[in-house]
Image (tube, rainbow, N blue to C red; front, side, top):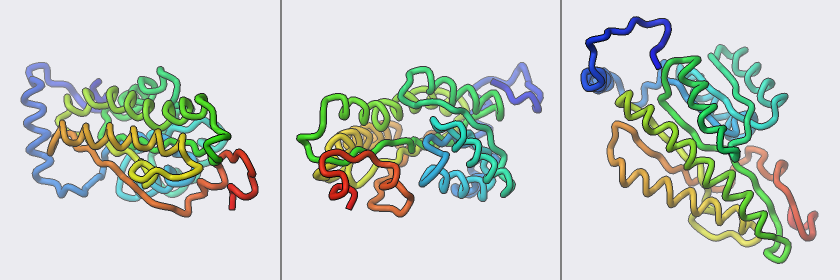
Length: 236
């Protein structure tokens, strides 16, 4: 899709456009994100909202995704007051059609897509006896399958541009199995495997892949988590 604000040169081939994009990037520092378009899932609160604020501070235009429309609008208003250029898409990333919705929103509003941050997630805390197959399926759908769908939808767009960054927020729970967080850890292990495998396959670019493996963070995840078994003890 062509940015409506720019003219299109019919004789300009895809190879020429890619070469021009490569030459332009060589003139920019790698950490210069001004003007880039970022899609962020799970962006209405917590780490997703913090990432959105930081990207906006560095000049990115934002496409925010979350399930709760009210929370999403509140986050967008907060960011716009700080000067951010924001559009929102209320959707559930576990639904198959959401990947296309987000990629289309970025291209329709801004004409391109430069950064994808897979951040949406769910946490269910409890002993293994309290879990069911449905808990694992839900965790995998949100934190493993959804990032795969979004990445596969974004990758050809970024490759055609000759530039892109794919970031997946995983967890230390995706490197070390965590007791009482088995559905979460199962999904995060899968997310780490996909992201690290993709990075190895794509190499140094032009589309780069980053796997983020944070430890405990004070972003409010424990407040949003679901608890099973002895709930008070699990929360503690």
